[in-house]
Image (cartoon, rainbow over all chains, first blue to last red):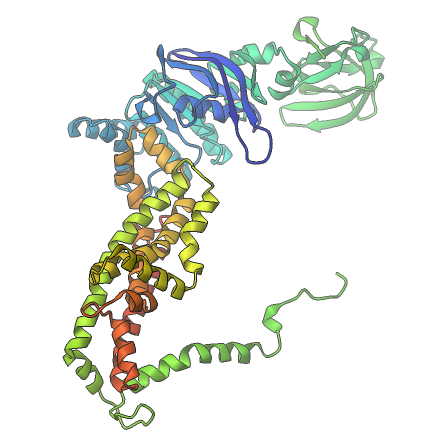
Length: 332
Length: 267
């Protein structure tokens, strides 16, 4: 569907050297997929989105949408619509006029426009708001108008640039499932940009984890969570313990990655054997779970998260253990 | 923390007297001019009762009417032409790919605001005679259009900068070509700023004296130039009356520009 081939982008700045926003990025985004570009700010994810939309041109490399090289196409000629981070609703138009805009520009007949506007507003559950101005809507409603406006022309690809970042937590959770539902119902390929790993894990079919202009790993949320191929990915997605090999008596050139929920902490007095011994340095009660911070004898610190909780208190000597198949060994 | 209060300008000694004095210097002369426009005496300095007779005299003075008409025609033409040019220029400056430095372009455009007006007036005169152009009103329209451009450009450019480019990106993303993007998105959003710029241009053109003085010829006299001519024969209450009218028109337009700029600034 979208084929990104060895794309680089550098920005020329006035005083310094050019900034390399993307370094030879290659990605394939499939039809009908909810794909997420995930990474911290400055990783190049928004730049990549803007290249797909056509707001920027790549410094090198090719972007194909449905087999066609779009390098020479301006944004208005690409079968792609964008939901902007700031929503970018036209303030001088009503909700209905905003949603109708794309179809009008495509010179669709009036009857089709009216039908699609109704359809799109129904899809985002804003049927009663057609005559309002954007300024009369709440942030969450504006967000939904932005989605309806981008979906109304039925593009092949919908690009979403941090669409939920301006909403409060509760609205955000609601919109996550809304967007997921819209993607399934419409069958349109969604490309989401976010820095929120939880959001990415919850919504995506596949995720590309990016850092400083590079794609580090592409895979399903489960794949990326269970099999991080990179220290950064392991650390950025969910919580991880990154333990130097030496502290566990293993190859010092390796880092052992273990998720906190896989680590079992038991009192040293039990006589159980484990990977290491240490002392509990902090206990945090999280409701359903309890988080233990353990300082190993070799000096490293790790976190264990467990249901319920053993009867441990701070300062107790403990043994930490986990099933070997749940850990990952990465090069330092 | 160390007991020293931060400087607070509101507690400067004599601040209110000083402020009052500034306003007196600003507005007392205008007030006196306006009051004596309603004086029934022919003497400018002696009050002899309230009267509209000088306004009536102005209304019946054919030469003043002609000059006023010239001023208004020139101002309308210069306003339309300079606002159109300023709109295009502001969009090129804010949205176009810079060819040479944006700063340099801005400096060149804003230059007429700092160049002494007498210099502009003389060079404009020399320019027209060099070209052999002696078209009376047309010369004035061209000259006024040129010096009105920076006044119209500044508010439009400021609005474009405030707006940011995202709305236009959204328009392009939704299949608008450049022309329809301008018609449906950019122009409607700029309209308050364009109106404000146009009103500024109108007032600047209407009030201009020095350049008009140099460029105008017999038959194309503007109102300020005519008033100056009247003054040389001594200040008559007629001058006060016509000046009062000009003042009122200017205030109304500038106030309108401010109001238009404030309203319509969509959340």
